[in-house]
Image 1 (cartoon, rainbow, N blue to C red):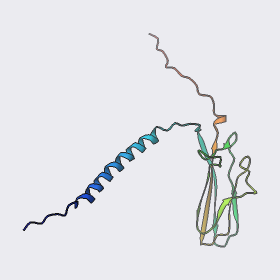
Image 2 (image 1 turned 60 degrees about the vertical axis):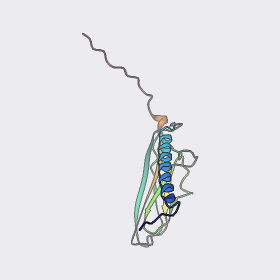
Image 3 (image 1 turned 90 degrees about the horizontal axis):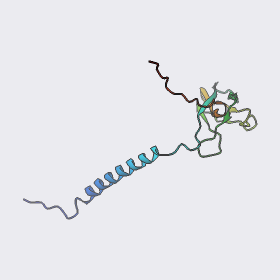
Image 4 (image 1 turned 135 degrees about the horizontal axis):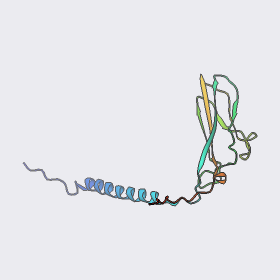
Length: 146
C-alpha cells in the first residue's frame, strides 16, 4: 500500500529550517556589530556603596554612600542620570532620599518600614575619577649594552 503525502507537507519543515538559518546569520551579524562599537566618551569608573539590615517592624532606616575624594558621580552611559542602583531583600520600599542627596556632595539611601522577618538594602553609586588619574607614562624598552 502506498501513501502519498499531500503537496506542501514539507513546507513547515522548510520554513523552520530557513528561519533557523536566517536567525543564526542575523545573530552573528549583530554580535559582530556589538564588538565593533567605539568607546566614545567612556571613562574608568569605580563604585562606592552603603548597606544595612532591618528587623521586622523596624521603621525607616538610611545610610550615606561615601563620596570618593576627587571624583564625580558618573552618568549612566548615554544619559544624564546618575549611575546608581538599589538592591533590596524583604518587603520594604527603598530609594535615594531627595532631601539627603544632591549627587555632588552627599548621597543618602533610605528604606521604609520592614514588613518581613528581615530586610536588607544596598545602595551603589558609580564614580568617575578620571580627573584625578595621572597622565599615562610612555615607556620604551631598555637597551642592553654589549
